[in-house]
Amino acid sequence: MYACVLALFLKFLELNAKNVKIRLFNGSFLILTLLILVTSTYSSNAQNSYSKNYTVKTVVIDAGHGGHDHGASGKRHKEKDVALDIALKVGKKIEREMPDVKVLYTRKTDKFIPLRERAQFANQNNADLFISIHCNGGSTTAHGTETFVLGLHRNEDNLKVAMRENNSILLEDDYNQHYGNFQPNSPEAYIIFNMHQSSHLNQSLDLANMVEQEFTGSAQRRSRGVKQAGFLVLRETAMPSILVETGFLTNGNEENYMASNNGKEKLAVSIFNAFKGYKKKLDDEAARIQAEKIRKQKEAAEAEARRIEEARRKTEAAWAWPALRHHHRKGEYYFVQLLVSNSYEKGPETFKSLDNVKMDYIKLADSWKYMIGPYDSFEAAKAAQLKAREEGFRDAFILKYKDGKRSK
Ligand SMILES: [Zn+2]
Image 1 (tube, protein in one colour):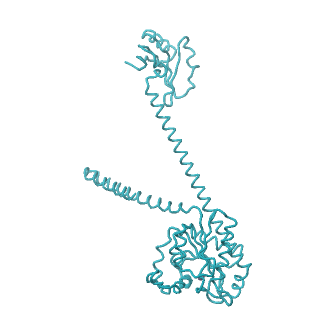
Image 2 (image 1 turned 180 degrees about the vertical axis):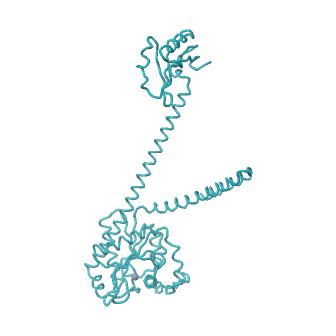
Image 3 (image 1 turned 60 degrees about the vertical axis):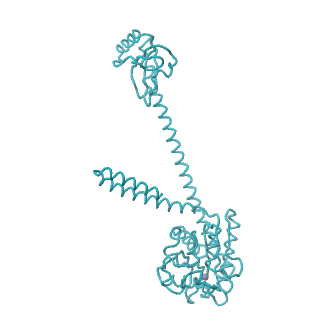
């Protein structure tokens, strides 16, 4: 595409050099053309990357933390365990109700997995969606759910959550080797995050909103909303991705709720419902795009059929009609053209006064050409022309044919 733009650009320069007078006009035209090309290239690329994701064939469910990485802790329960239980429940519901979706888990047991490997796992499996499930930690009064998408944190609280979750990398061996000089506790390190995931932001936000809506609806949790912050686990994923904080383990009431089977079940149902809604939205959109594609193909086929028909008519019209029906006739003969009409209403009724003459017509493009004949001699044609003029066809004239073709 860009090579094409460049070629056009060079062609314009060449043309402009040849014609100095129109340089100004071409110059502005050139800028406009380039702008349109660049804009359409950009939007078509954006459309492509978006439409590529118009389905969820594979989802990665990521239970946060694991092994020696406990995550947040309540009085009795650890984040790694609660998150795993909820994650497994979500996955099981998808497997059971949506068998066409492949569910992959970053972990199904109490195992430590580095953050970067979680994202790599999703990327390597060409996942269409990445859902990371966590539990929050904070003050004993803080409570509620929040769902994050990758981005620049808008406030310190969001940053704190990201920092806390990213601290997992400090439990990895040689983390410096894998994350460069990224310091999870340094606010400055988070400036890099706005460059990643932007192409998936809309879809990630869609799902995040659905999750929070479900939490307040079916699970009757307090939602702290959809937020953006710099999560390492989301940063490396090449697909729409969210990180769900299902509640605060540091809050006694929420810890009890999240640790209960009923609580885990409701939280899992919420995430599952949101997933279902998200997939449905994508599938509907894919169906709409497909229908639109079929409509456009049909339109193009119809336009092509019209073009072929028009070309056929023109070819037919270019024939020295009535050679079409008389083109095997040898020698000289004549027709008298009475009129050309754009409707067939001026059909036989119009010509009934012309007794004993042959009447014929040709559909020429969008009009009908009425002629009488053929006559073997010019005299016979002349007599027919006179009679036609007497009958009101004042413009009747004689056409001469030879061997099936119009002649002079
Ligand atoms: Zn966590």
